[in-house]
Length: 270
Image 1: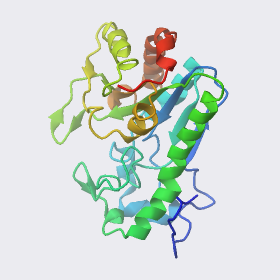
Image 2: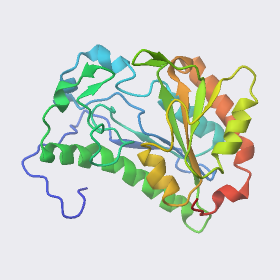
Image 3: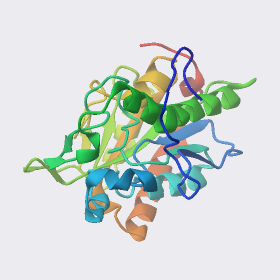
């Protein structure tokens, strides 16, 4: 569906019959008052877009998706009995956690790797990608929030991400980070719970900050007054099925008592 007033002419459908959908909703009937989202769950590229000119091996790397994040999201959704919304395509195609117009939304390069398919995009091509991949994801999140709010308190929002152990030659010592801005309702108790786990190195707004670009939690969380935060887990810890299951257990144990607090289901702006 196109945004009102925007016309896309002479653009073939970007998603073909053999391609995955742009968004998937998991456990829609889950009873928890929590919506889990995963912006960078997938490394998929539509077949017609020829891997954006990259070799296939690059789509096994962190530049294409958040390694392990989709598995953690799926398992955590089941553990907490919470609905989840999962993006269907690679962040190299469109980064669903960037605001429209951000130059890193369709990057010319990622971690020093040029992305030829993103060179010299026209406005029409940019809008067509957003219409095919970006808006369906965010519309699905909005639709789930509306559904979950129907006659009830608003849900809390938790975004699942993962980060590479090193970036641009800089090592990152954290096992997990909690990203947030001004609303402490989820972030502070979650930080405390994770710091109580022996052996974990926990970052507060590390390795990224929720005060910087964080489109999904900003729009669907902070702007709406919903309690929110994002989780960043180091990718080597969740790259295997066992690692993802371990971290789903850690997060479920940490989140359980937090979800019993009625304050997180109130609309509040900080």
